[in-house]
Length: 182
Image (cartoon, rainbow, N blue to C red; front, top):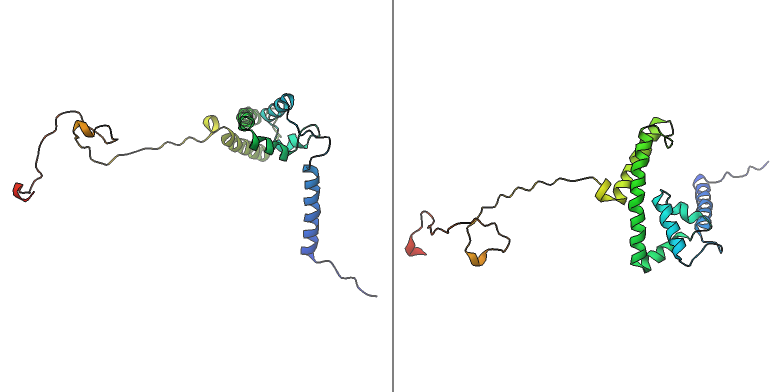
């Protein structure tokens, strides 16, 4: 009996990866039923779903919503639409803040698994900080110490960003210098 050769493991993995990649591309590709013209109603629906915590991937998988590429083109072509989407992400961060509180208190979004909940909370905190830095971002406190000497300047040089002390200017010669050598 002749033995059939076993397939190469790396080759089998690459074939499986290619098949999986094609399936993902097929899902992500816009079907004929998906809209590609932007309307007021469609824009508001995208905003509402984003603000409610849905990801753009989840929104684009819905056959009634445009594909990811279409939304990206709209954002690139219209800065006002891009600002509108950015605003939705800021509201999404607020939703994530409420979700974090719900998970931490064992509410309806909690899985009951402490490690899983901890991972969810950390991920939501990170995303909220990225989506809305002003409200949820890490604050940084910077301490500035100025070691430059403060110099008395005549009035014509004031206002050039140099530190100024109010008062009279004294005419003092540096110590150890002879007036004749200047």
